[in-house]
Length: 455
Image (cartoon, rainbow, N blue to C red; front, side, top):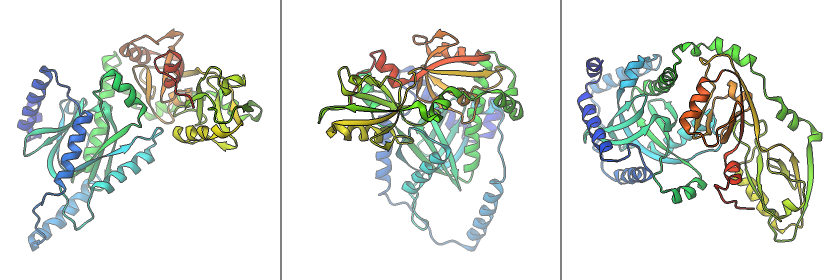
């Protein structure tokens, strides 16, 4: 296998040296992933490079023009092709030659969709790619893609520019001959600093590359995720790859009932209640609100904590877990958390606040029907927190939400259970899987891990 890979990749000698360097680095205790500091340094170097002259030759000979036409034809032909790697090849890793154009940071949307991610990718291209006719600063690089990580190797300097674990990749887009790689930033802050970092709006680092094989690069990264998932299943004793059969999975989806209790609560007008909260002028309302979570029936905010003796607590009509539909006639449905917080802060001058609420318990009941382990649940977990969710999958239909903390699985508490045990419990669970979840911020407030900031 190693010999075959060396034949496929002429850059293997460089790659081998890189792996040697990474091994030595790991042995000396360094972390093999991009940190905030490394990212900032990279962006700084990029800004310096923009002011360097790049040699260019605008005069094209007839032979060059003919070659350009041929290259365009080849490019169009390639876009119609699909590259499929053997799983073993992606486990070892594949290399693509590309030009690195630059990097930028973009704010991470709390409820990202495929369309919003594509818009962010196009924004990154707009920031970095110069208009046609202008000289584009760039660096020749090799993109190394495997089921473990994505590395960017400087072709000339023979060193590592970037190293992203595959799990940190949020989105990959190919736009014509450009590739946009979007990754979450990895923080190496101390526990005290980490608490402040969590409160900041998260950012994505977006790298832009140019390559004739842009589509193949995007396909290879997608296949790397698929192979990594298959290897995870095999590691847990699941050998049958039949979960990939779409028709089979559609039957499971059809059998999965939509969790209707919450939908009924929001659909019925009588379940909505107008609450008038009397208060003193310049007195805060006295509550903490959090997002209901991506995947919830009604995208709004939830009461996570009440200030003892505050106006919201004194009125005895608001409870932790209640959904806020509107405040003083302003609808909160679909608004970002920051905007909802701003509206609540603006009522400080009022002597009475009218709130439209739906009383719901703080703990969300989840029921997922999974007949066999070969069917993916459709969500990912990190330390008990739901990180991502497959739209339209059995998990979403069963009530799973992004940003929620899993409290119980099939009646067993997982509050103090390690990450690996939770993953194993979910990976091997079949039949009707019952879970209890709540927004992570609410969980941290209730357990004293986070101090409330009342508004």
